[in-house]
Amino acid sequence: MKDVTAMKEIKPKRLQKGDTIGIISPASPPNAENLERSFSFLEQLGLKYKVGNHVYAQNGYLAGEDEERLKDLHEMFLDQEVKAIFCAGGGYGTARIAAQIDYELIRNHPKIFWGYSDITFLHTAIRQKTGLVTFHGPMLASDLGKEHADELSKQYVSQLFEPQELRYPEHLSKLETIVSGTAEGELIGGNLCLITSTLGTAFELDTKGKLLLLEDIHEEPRNVDRMLNQLQMAGKLEDAAGFIIGDFNDCEPKRDASLSLDEVIDYYIQKTKKPAVKGFKIGHCSPHFSVPLGVKAVLHADQKEFIIENGVI
Image (cartoon, rainbow, N blue to C red; front, side):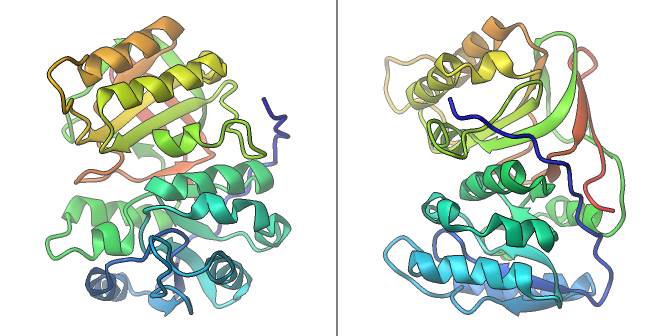
C-alpha cells in the first residue's frame, strides 16, 4: 500500500454568468455531434466556452497522443480566462497521463473540474496530490449534449453557481439499506474499475475514514466480485467509514450460472459492518445526481439520507 499524504482541502471558486468553460478530452475521443450540441446548453447557463486544441484528436481509442491530452489539461488550468474545466467524455486513457501531470500547477490555479467514469482516476489523483475538490457529474458529449439529455441531470450543474448543501432527493430512485447506522467523512470514489486500477500505484485510493462512492457499467457480477475482492484484500473496504452504492448500469449476468449483482455487492459490503445504502442515481445513468468529491458528507443509512457539503466557494 502506498503512503498518501493528506492535503489541505481547496474548494474552487463558484461560476458566474459570463465565465468561460474549458473543454478537454483526457480519455477517449468524444462524439463530435453530441459535444457540439452541448455548447447551446452552456450558452443557456450564460457561459462561454473554449475547446482544447486536441479535443477532436484521435489515436485509436485515445483522444490524441498522451502528450496532447496532457497539454490540453495543463493549458486549461493555466488559462486565467477559464474558470472551470469540463470533460467532453470518458472511455479510457486518463491513467496514462496521471504521472506526468503538474500537480503544483493545479494547486496554484485551482478551478472547477467536472466529469466521471474514466475521469475517476483524475479525481483521485488531483484530490490526493493537491487537495482540490472536484465534481463527479455528467459530461458534455457523453450525457449533456445528447439529443434527449435528461433535464434533472442538467439542473444539478447549478451547484457550481452557488455554494449549497446537497441532499439526495428521496423521490429520485428506490434506495435500499445494506448496513444500518450513520457514517460521515470525506466523500471519495467513483468508478469501481478505475478505483481498483489505482492499487499499487502512487495514486492508490486512500479510503481511511471516508465515505466511498462506487458505480460502474458493463461489468458482469463476477467482474464486480473480482474488483470488490481486490479492494477488500487491500484493506480499502475495511478502512472506509461507509458506502454510497451508485448505479451499476448493464451489470447483469451474461451466463446462466451466476450470482446476482445484489448478492455480490451485499456480500462484500455487509462483511465490513459499515453503514451503506445502494440504489443512488450516481454513475452511468439518467438522471445523474452530481456530487463534489473531497468534501464532508453524511449518510444516515436507516433513514436513507445522504447529505453533502457544498463544493464551491
